Structure formats: structure tokens, C-alpha cells
Image (cartoon, rainbow, N blue to C red; front, top):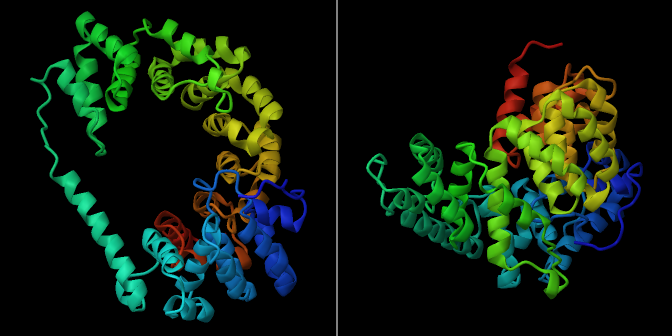
Length: 433
């Protein structure tokens, strides 16, 4: 990730850095004139949170469309550390059949570590099967698949106890460490069905003192669902503590940080009116309370909170590239009030964090008739985030010839996420408008 400031969002470079649809279209129209900017994005990695933000499909598809030579990407990737986006883009180009990328992956002269990084991208995204790869790459792909199969087998071998009614509270909480989906809701239901004072006291003790994340998180959620407010003083105490990573004297230890995160879950799982009352009281307190308040609003905000949500969004949309307002954007999407559209459009245009833009576009999808919303959704067909393009496929009011061709390309794409392909295909089956 580059530390350099991003270009203005109204420029082609700024739009490419952010992964915006208008940047894709502008670069596509420019062709080879956009090479330098596209390379600068891929090799400089402009993402705010590289592990969370998608860019590989966006840059790879664009590179293929404008005929960007793969050699500079390979040269950058060969440097090793910090070259993940270049490797991901080469993997996309390979999946799209680019001759240069195919030749490079088949070249015995490529360093083993460099090849492994590219193959890992292909394997993790499902863009290649072992049979489609040349011998060296195939061996890496098979090893990755075998390691993944071993992990899956280990999960299958875990105890699958399903009868919960006869288990003690501590036994139920211990099952909270099970990572498999579907278990936690059943455990929460069993704990809340008991709901007696002894159970709630034990839940609070675990929430307050236990050291195991799975047990603490389950206890926090169950205690909140039981509408038990005994953990609120502890929550306020931990939410108020400073946590500055650069200052050892003001940095929380890992266990306290874990417990504080679980206490956010506790507050969110309180009954909506109770959780909202706390959030509205904490809104002005700042610091970590902003995180908690956002999480509550995301789940429980009502129309009465719209002004407060918009005020926070207006004041903080630029903080950390938009990371700070993710929950507020989700809350406005739930409310679906067209009066929020101007703010949402500003976030969709300016946010450096592509997940913030995605959330703003999702909110606009809930109000497609609002001024500017349809155009924002149209551009989202070329957005870097699959979810943004999927919303555009589903909620764009009408499709012109260009838009319909793009939806058809997404439905047939070998690099788009499955949900995006399904939504694109479903849109094509709808009557033309």
C-alpha cells in the first residue's frame, strides 16, 4: 500500500485508485494513454485496507481490455514483499487467457516463490484448476488443495454433539468455540431459553473474566439477548479506555481488547430500544464509543436517528478514507430515506475505502429514484467491488444497450464472484425496460 495521497476523485487517476466505475470507463476509452496510471495503481497499491478491498478483478479486467503488457507487472511482482496486487493482477490476466501471463506462469525461469504467489491467487479465487496449469504451477496448486482438504477433514472430525438441552451452561459456552456455521444461533437460543438468574450471573462472570474469545463472545450475546443490563458499567469502563497502538503506556493488552469487542456485541444484542438509548447517550463521547454507536445504529436505527447519522457522516466521511462511517452508511441503507441521497452520492464519489463506496451504493440502491442514484448505480456495473456491481445488476431501474452488454459480460465472467454472476444472469431474464 502506498502512503502517497490519492489523486482528486474527479480525475481519472483518482477514480482508478479508488476502483470506481467511471475510472474504469475513462481508462477504457483512453486505451494505451492510461497505461502509466494503471501501472501506478497496481504497483503502488492505493487501497486503504489491502486485505479487505477488492482490486484484482478491476485492474486485471481493465489491463486485458486495454492491452497492458504483463512484463512490468511481472517485474514488479518479482521483487517479492508488498507486491500482492501485481501478482493478483497477473493471476486475473492468466484466467482471462492473456498470452503473456500464460507464458510467464509456464516459464521454468520464474522464481519458485513468485510462481507460488501467483498460483495461490489462482487457487484461492477458483480461477484455475490443477489440470489447466503447467506442471510446476500444477504441483503448487495440488499442494494448496491438499492442505485445505486436511483442514476441512480436521473440522469434520470434531465432535458433532447436537443435543443441547441436557448440557450445563459452561458446556454450552464451551461449544461456542466451534467455528462451524449454524451452531451459535442454537446455543444462543438454548442459553436465552433458560434465562434464569443463575444462568445470567454465569454469563456475566464469563464475559467479565474468561480468557477464551469464543466463550466470551457467546456469553456477551446471550446476556444482551436476555435484556440484562448488568454488564453496562463494565462496557462503559472499557469503551472509555484509550488504546493507542503507538504508545505502550496507553495501549490495551490483547485480552482487554478482545473483551471490549465482545462487549460491543453485548450492547448490540440488547433489545433495540435499550441499545438505542445507550447509543444516543454515547454519541457525543467520541473515541471508541463512536465504534459502538455505529454498530448499534447499523442494527437498530430508526427514522428518528437519521439527522444524527447524517451529521456524523458529513463530519467523518473523510476520516481514514471512509472506514469510520461504514456502520452509519449501513444504517442509512436500512432507513432508505431519499433525503440522504446527496450525502451518499458524495461518499460514493469521494471515499478512498472502496467498502465505504460499496455501502453508499447499496444505500442508493434502496432509493433508485432519488436524483443521481440511477447514474451512480449505472457506473457501479464497472466497480471494483463485486457486491456493488451485484446491487447495480439488481436495482438499476433500466438498462441501455451498453449497460445490458456489461451485465451480460458479468453473467459470463470467469473472474466475477458467483453471486454477481447469478444476479447478472437474473437481470438478463427480466423483461427489457
